[in-house]
Length: 494
Image (cartoon, rainbow, N blue to C red; front, side, top):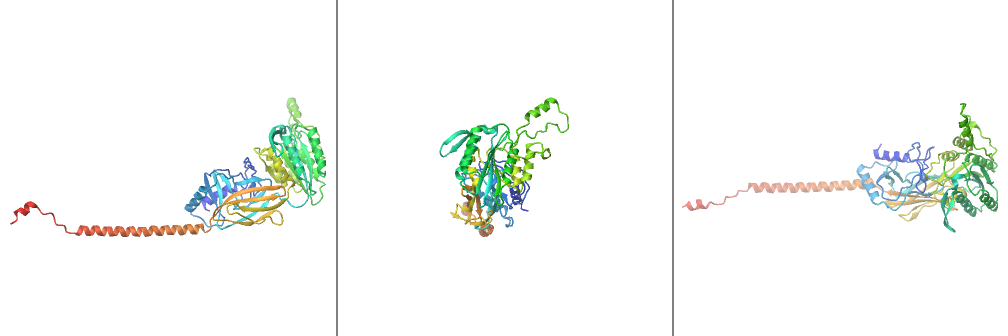
């Protein structure tokens, strides 16, 4: 195994989402956390939009990633190409996921990632870029029924800056930012293929509007929601909200997709509903029992589901239990607007149900992301070589999930953009820097041979010049040179 190639592959493996683990780190704003995953080969599928973007600036180093079956390059050649890549790097550009609200799985050579201060850059040996991947959250043409869960806990009372075209920037609560995102969604959702329901959850769970209402009915229900619950309240009872949404979706007709979208800050859910104040069979002091009871949530859950201690005595375990039971029944997507939080419990839920965790820079970005996540239909996926000025044909296969195609390259650096387009605008935009080096090894070896031949020729010339010089010196030493006459001796001569 080539040491550097092996090193690069191992580093890309650590970034991969091809297996069961999730690397839901650093959203478009660059704030994602990494989690340990199994190690599939570097050239196998990876979750491209879940990688941390390659920041603007000249990389400290470059690590080249070539095809698995490509001929080995000498270290000197790799170093020369890496130096060239770094010297040509545009310091003002960001690479990787620029924006994404759905999963985009890709294969080599579409990969750029930072690794120990260096940037991994693919190098292809042809003037054509193969493109292969998939949309892990595809948007087909079928009807959908979606229930949106709105975080209305006490943490939703914190203030954020909200920007809109009509009002400019203003300070609003997180809960109000969520409501405005719902308003914006309804402005765009005049489609008969989409049914939307809304549930608010905080200390209690409040059913706002069941799916099936017309748009005006939804608007009226949201207006009541604003009036009756102006502020967030108490703890975060996400488990009850999920079960309520599932029961709403149980009657969904066959052929209609069932989905739940959770608007959340990613904080660990704690409802107080599942506290075990009995002490697991051990005696507790009266004070400890009273303190536990004070934290218990007595609010009734509107879902008919009855929670069992066999499913766990914490929200985290109950969430995992819900995810297991919902697998294959519906998909849960979480739109996370506090990207610095790990949201581990939601990672488990979306992974088990085949959903998607989408991170946005903050609550003010919910308005932009929610419509594409909830009500978009993917129209096409195209790749564009900005360096060469050419665009691929539609890469989306008839199954509306797989991506397959190719894009023309020019020798040297190529800035490639992959764009997923929906009826709500751009659903994903990723940018890659790819190097095309056709016959690079052959050209380098030919140049090396030419340099060696020139050196050998020069050595022969120097050898000849040295031999001629030694011959002249030898001849000079063999010449007889008469000494200068002695004047005194000459005077004595007759």
